[in-house]
Amino acid sequence: MSSHAHLSEPDPEWLSVAAQLPMDDEDRTNIQPDLVREQANNARKAIDAVLAPLLPTSNVRTISKVLSLKESDIPIKVYIPGSVSQDSYPVILWIFGGGFWLGCVDIDDLLLRYWSSQLDAVLVAVEYRKAPEHPFPMGLNDCYACLKWIASHQQEIHGDISKGLIISGISSGGNFATVLSQRASQDPELKGKVTGLAADIPLLIHPAAYPEKFKDELKSVEQNKNAPIFGKARLDYALTLYKPPEPSHPDMSPLLFPHLQELPPTYIQVDGLDPLRDEALLYAKLLKEAGVPTKVDVYPGFPHGFHCFFPTLKAATKKREDFKNGLRALLLNEIS
Image 1 (spheres, rainbow, N blue to C red):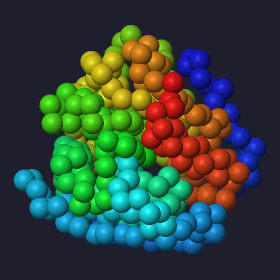
Image 2: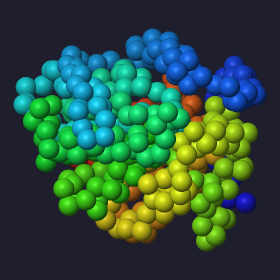
Image 3: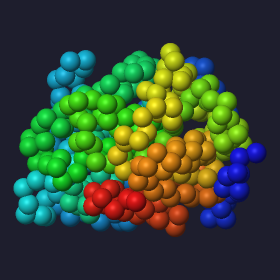
Image 4: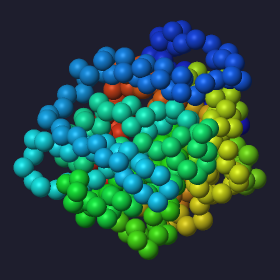
């Protein structure tokens, strides 16, 4: 049994809202991706209406652009602080989640406005291509192309990456962000330019790629297989759509990246009642052993992404503030 099994014990605050969730008995054989995406995006807009009073922002300017790059045209949305007189700011690339197939560039609009105003940073959200129409590694490559564009066009977005270049993301977006930090560490064009990684509930290893030496440390995918919001059935479905041909390749399973010692300071958030819990905790452990400054915040007894669906919970408020503070610590080089 995983030594982290106690983290799955439901928190009393979670139990107070858990009854509102439907059973995960959805038939996924005839899902229409575009219809589900529209429904999910509309649901997030309704949640943002509740969240808005909790996330005050000063004036933040936005710029929408389309990057015409080698593989595809990539829409991005840029958030620039509007209440500070300086001309350039550190840059944070944000990659939304959604199991590789849901989400859009506007889905975290309110949160990105908040971070931009609170951190005096430029936030860049990228509209990457999604599965199943665009399986592995198309969306990942879009995000990496965007990262390289930021590094070479920073002045166009009022950015100055010498003040900080952070890659961040949630869930499948956390997978992309982690892979990007690894790719950048090996890329002569980007080596040394990425100054931090911030990953919330990231997917870090394909269940089919668990190494024998780590199997005793990767129990949460089974222990939390029936967890609310995101259980093993939803994980398996997402991976079926994403179609990685080699589950053990580091571009799918960044936990297996062989050069951890070359990575930037890292901040990770982990939900206790989450199938992805143990891989995030193991990755943080391996980073620390490799000498990478790493900080982890854990939310025992809460399921994957709970703060996105129940934003008024005390634990959700704490988690949002912790992530903002994690980003700030990375920008100030205060992760140890």
